[in-house]
Length: 272
Image 1: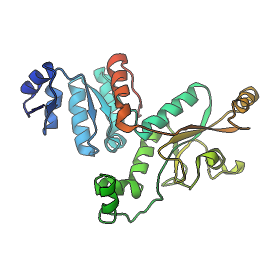
Image 2: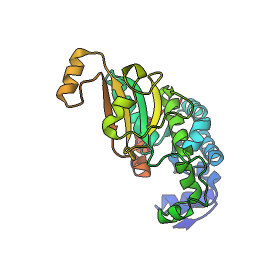
Image 3: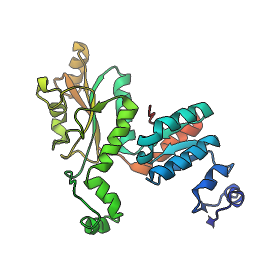
Image 4: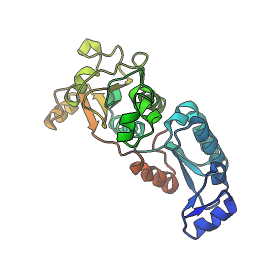
């Protein structure tokens, strides 16, 4: 392992297949051997600075930093397009997993009524690092990070990213966030006229029921032939159906986005 803040020394070490560690993120864009950069600090300003410098150096950027993407993602995407390289949100985060389900549904011609995720605890707007310290230590987490999960900040940011990538919007400010388990998702996240809670279709939302760490989309079709087939495939009577993925593997899935960007020139999540 080589520790350095010198891009020339870092380049030599990488060529020799050594691991390089640095405290200076700005050198990354000056290392020729690097083709793609995964930004995962979770700090909006740092993420923006690193991504911009890498794009200007024509390096693909895989963003594992939703905090940056929801603020300047569309701008970074446009700059990357102009530079002929890929800027993408990473697979593995809930937003990436949701977008993959969304793409699957839309490609098959379904209407997406709701795209969402599970939140594994009710929102506590008054959560703070002191209150969450014991639980954070038990989970080997930073208390501030845990607070962002508990008070809903992380969920709001993630679903903003999904909204930017799909054109779906919150049904109400802050979304509904009902306590609904997987078997009832397609009964609740549908328009009110059909017995659900939505004022409008085409939304992002979340559930505090037994859904996490999964993600889902609620789809609809008015085709009698397709509805007959979906009933045969045990997806229910319709016209609303649930597509559910019971996991997201966070950074474990990130190499998929790296390979897609470098080898195929494709993005995982495209924020507009």
